[in-house]
Length: 285
Ligand code: PDD
Image (cartoon, rainbow, N blue to C red; front, side, top):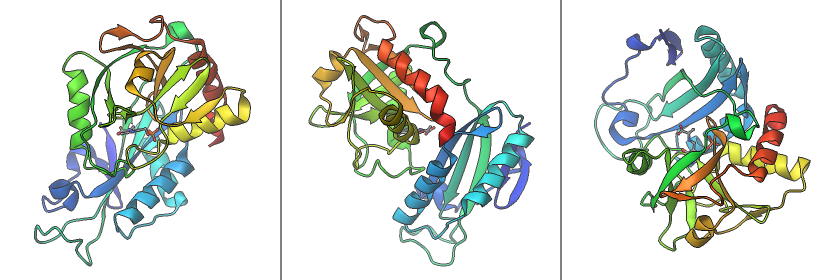
C-alpha cells in the first residue's frame, strides 16, 4: 500500500481526496516535480525545488516552501514506501475555488500533493546492461511555454501516446522549422564526431535538471565538447548517437528512430563515457 502526502497529512493513497473544484483538476493549473531517489538518496534535490519555486512564481501561485520542508516530506515518503528506486512526485495546484472562473482567485489555499512511485534502477554504465530506446518522431504541437513544468500535460501525453501506440518507447519532437525541441517527457541530444549537441534553453523545452547536471558534469570532468544550439531533423537522422535524459531515465541511448537505426544501431562510446561520469557525480547536486 502506498502512503502519500496531501495537504499536511500522510495517508494511504486510497484515502487521499481533493475537491472536484480544484483548479489543478479543472484547468491543469499547477506545477509539479519528479525527483529520483536511489537507496534513500535524492538526486538533484536542490535544483528540482528551485525549479518548482520558479514555476510557481511564473504562474503567480503564492507558495514557497523551504528546501527543508520539502526535504522532510520526501524523506518521510521514502521511509514510508521502502527505500528502493523511487521517483518523488511533488505537486502544487492553485487550490479549490467555489466557482469555475478563469482568473486567478484570491484567498485560495494551494493544494499540495506528493507521492512516491517505483522507477527503474539507476543506469549501469555498461552497454550490455542498458536498454536502447526506439523512438518515433512528430511535430511539436504543444504550447509556447514548455519551459514551465505545468501539470497541464495533455500535449505531452498525446505526443507520448503517438509513439507508444506504435510500440515505441518515446516520441521526439520537431518544431515548425524542423528543429529538435525535446521528447514528450525528456530532453534530447545528438552526438556528432564526439561533440554532444542539444537545443538551447528557451520556451520550447523544459530546462531539465538531468540536462543541467549532465552538461555541468561533462564540462567539469571531461574534455567532451558541448554545443547548445539548434539541431535540425537531418542532423538527428544522421547523428552518430542520440540520447534522451530525464530524472527517471538518466541518460537513455536511442538506437532507432522511426524504424531507422541511429549510427550503426549500437549504443555509442560517448554515451558510455557520459553515463560513467554521470553515475560518478550525480550525487554532487
Ligand atoms: N519528465 N522535458 C519534459 C517535457 C519532461 O516532462 C521532462 C521530465 C524532462 C526532463 O526533466 P528532468 O531531467 O528534470 O526530469 C524534459 C518527468 C520526469 C515526468 O513528467 O515524469
